[in-house]
Image (cartoon, rainbow, N blue to C red):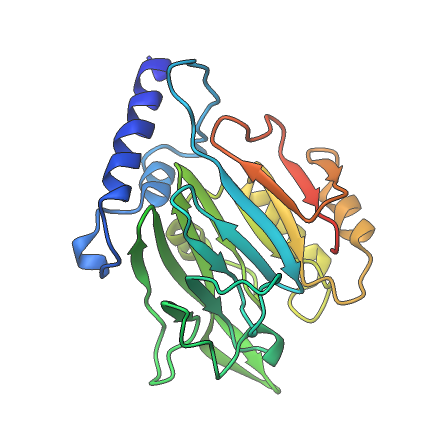
Length: 269
């Protein structure tokens, strides 16, 4: 049954996404990542094989600190926690930002960037993003940050990119544990980008707890800030494989997600 339905879902969703320009949330269908997660407890998409269907690939590149560049099958480039540079002289079409430190945002983004998505609302209250750009749906889940000795409500965002039937999340500069409402809003994440500094965001104890609960197929460390990557890896436990790569980039599709949850450490981390 799944072998019949899932290829059809891939083909239909690819056709729908490709036809949609950038548009606000009210014109866009509900998130598939949250819909699946809420409909079936602990649901995970299974791998499948069908030679007649080719799963589209997404390329992900580590560009430094907390910036990953996500390139979609339709050619949309997205830079996360963008501070003004995304590598190799490229100008992303979409950038996301958080404001805990100036290494996570810029006040002067290149005017050539089509969509600048801030994880906070300069006018107050939570930032709300739900944007379709060609084949990718981008949304956010607001969280709080520390500001000096005070907490600033809704000062950070977890950004989620739904593309090629993958759910890709970037935790941003996360400063507190997530509650059930956060997990429900996030939904399923096949790939998650996790800060592993061990204290400037969250301790390794709390960050590994979040990462284990998300149970993503691929965990991408970021924001190392001098902390040992080995400490985070060891604390994640034997339930997660570890894959150290020589390069700073990889491609992935729904077909090629690892069967065992894997911490993927790219060059430069």
